[in-house]
Image (cartoon, rainbow, N blue to C red; front, side, top):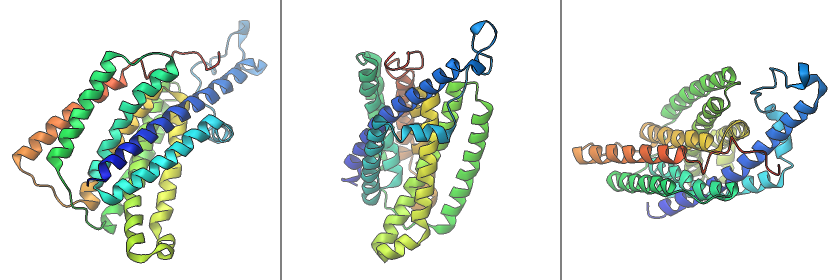
Length: 317
């Protein structure tokens, strides 16, 4: 438990750096794509104005977007930060409870504030620090009242149910995102929630893989299902979050994803891994207050001008 908290915070910092760099790269790629479409004579309507299909156009196809991003040094730097953060998260999950580790990932928003301010050329606002303080207070209270949670061996039947439910939710969110192609921020939120569910599944599979590795060795683990499931959820989550970054603001994507991940992690942890918590009045009341503080703080951070960039021009003019 002692090691899991700093490792989870380190992972959150690296994920925030990764998100800031990759979102900037993805938005730049999408803006260049739309600029090329505007210059194309087949995309210009009468009077030289963009056609109705161009207005509110969605980001480029995922395949084209990923090809462009794979050649972008800024995106690759963000990818490296994300991989390192994943390593820190995996170690945190090994030493602690998935419920606590996933809850601490909310601190990505705290780290995103100075990063967003740096990229936007502005200082963080007083409201940003107030929101950060409220989130920190909520997290400290949550970890304190929750206490140490013994992590049991994962239940195969339970994880199958969790994966089935998660797959259904992701499918519905993808359908919603498709119907919201003309509403950039709503589409981004739907994709980011789906990505958050994927990354929660990744955390679940990391715990299973780590348990396999400790009990059965490297070869047996490599031939078992957790590594394949881990790769699938991580790849799908990465694709979804890059599409979300390309179409909306950093605030919209990060808020939707960082709130979804801990909530889904809490549910998955209760169902699949963790022993039932002590359900006394003090724990329930403290948890309720902590959740309210976290939600209020996240709401303040999510609406901060330091994170919103959808009204800015494209980088570099």
